[in-house]
Structures are given as structure tokens and as C-alpha cells.
Length: 90
Length: 236
Image (cartoon, rainbow over all chains, first blue to last red; front, side, top):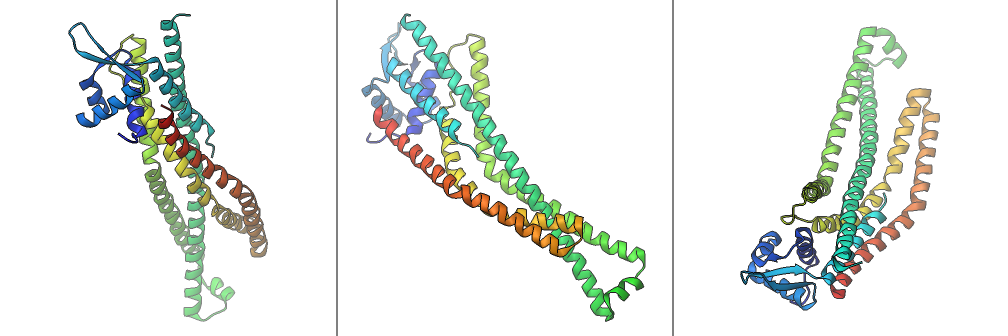
């Protein structure tokens, strides 16, 4: 994937942050509202940048979790939106 | 401080920023609504007054021309009931057109704000749900508001230059309202014209003074927003 959509990345980070714990791929994909191949592209993109990490649970199922770098990026995104909205006056 | 505490603090900071986003969005929408309401009232008052005067003038002119008399003689010959009914008809036409203008403008404004309003409602709903889950110590199942907030910020930075452009026409509206109010209060057309023109020029001067500055500020804000959107992805 060359240039990911910021809205999808934001939503991905949002879902991971709001859910707190690690999540199954299918659950994230459902909440994200994109098809599976598209979801996998985004997941790989985020994995490559260490924003999320994969681990295995006791049943051997893959779980996705937000890394500290992911939380930091999400924090930056939220602060930037807050700053933008605080800065607009009419 | 260990990692868990650090993580928990960071999560609290983010949550507080998210709550603050919802608050600022709500306040922003409220300010926009108040502004649109003022414009609606002035617009309706102006339309109502113009229709009242136009209907009155046309009716008087019509009767006057049809009877071919001097205007003073014409009024002397008419009963008080006729004069009141003429005034009543003009007032009713003015009132109805004023009300219709108000609702027409409201519909127009509501359509423009529908997207913003529904985004903010959605954000509030999600934040409340998240808050309830946090209070009940429930983990998971939450939905964030970042996508909506991002979309809202984008809509706002696009809408602001449009609003400033529209504000340029407000001076004429305020001048016209000043003219009508003065004419009703003082009953002197010359004074009303002078006051109307003065108000128009004053509001125009003030708007013009701030227009260039505000437009460049908002255009810059929009440009920075687009740039940061691109940069954010690149810095990940």
C-alpha cells in the first residue's frame, strides 16, 4: 500500500485504543468496516511501523495490540485534532 | 513510575483530550447556530418590512391612479376602516413573508449544518458510552471518535472561508434594516436614508478591514490542516 487513508488509520488506532486490550483480527475488521484484503493491507502497514503488535493467546489465536509507539501516535493525532478545533474561531 | 502507570496516565490524557474535542465542537456549533439565527432574524425582518412597504405602496398607488385624485383627497375620502384594512393587509403580507423567509433560511442553514450536527451527536453518544464503560470498569467494545473528529475538523476548516465570504454581504443587510427602523421611528425618509447608508458604510468598513486578514488566516489554516494530514501519515 503506497499511501494509506488517514481516516482508516485513525479509525484503526481508535478501535485499538478504545478497546484497551488485545483484539482478534475479525473483530477489528468488523469495527473498521473494510473488506478483509483491505484490512490486511492496513494491518501490515501498521505492523511494519510498529504501531501494533501480534501475539498469541492461550488458544493459539492471533491477537492484535496497540504498542507504546501506537499509543503515542494516537495521542499525537488526538492532540492535533484538538489543537485544530480549539484554533478555529468565528 | 512503571510502564503500567505510564500507560494508564497516557490513556487518561488521551481520554481528556477526546472529551475536550467533543466540548469544543459543541461550543463551535452553538456559536455558529447563534450567528445563523441573527442573520435569519435580520433577513426575515428586512424581507417583511420590504414587502409591507411594497404592498402598501402598490395598493395606494393603484387606488390613487384608478380614481385620478390628489393623494390627500384620496385619503380624506376613504373611511378609517378602509385605511386600517389597507394597513392590515400590508402588515399581514409583511408578516407572512417575514415568517416564510425565516423558515426558508432556517431550512437552508439546517441543511448546511446537518452534517456537522450529526457528527457531533455521534461523537457525544460514543463518548458517553465510553464514559459509562470506564465507570463500570468494562474493557472492550468501545468505539472512538477520532474519525468523526477528523471529519468535523476538515468540514470546519472548509466552511470557515465560505462563512467569511458570506459575511461580506451582511453590511447591505444591516444598512437596509437600519434604514427601515429609522424610517419607522423618525418617519423621515432623508434621515432614514442617511442612517441606512452610514450603517452600511460602517459595517462594510469593519467587514472589509477584517476580511483580508480573516480570509488569509482561514485559508492558511486549511492549507496547514491538509499539510498536517499528509505529514502525519509520513511520520508514522
